[in-house]
Amino acid sequence: MRVQELSINRFALKEKYTIGRLSVDGLYLCDTLEDRVRELPGNEAGPFHKIPGETAIPRGHYQVIVTFSHKFQRRLPLLLNVPFYSGIRIHRGNHENHTDGCILVGENKAEGKVLNSIYWEEYLTKLIDEYEGETWITIE
Image 1 (cartoon, rainbow, N blue to C red):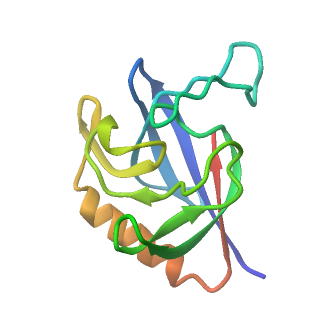
Image 2 (image 1 turned 90 degrees about the vertical axis):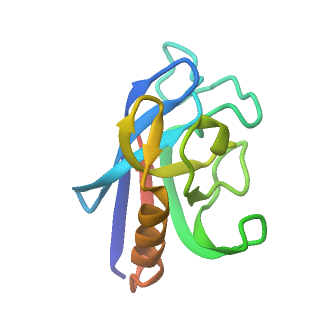
């Protein structure tokens, strides 16, 4: 079976948000915006202190599928088996108030924001949905 590998390299861990770079099979695609990372120091993979709607998901390797989101009323990527979370999507949005634990995609051209997120959501959803194999994402 063919596997498509996505990865997010979180590089700007701020007090209220986290900025990362999303790559597909090793090639940079766009930027990401997530809630604040709350991992405890000295523990590489957690544990972390979760505040609902204000905490980025734990680092890890997750399968991604595209399904219909009743909340957003469209097909979106969904991360499976995320510890302590459910319904984690990759979707459009511009600032940390739009994340609610999810991953926003776009271009980090303004501090604390991603822009052109509609384009990047649609592009990434189509890329994952049309791939003839499994898609996985590693979040670092």
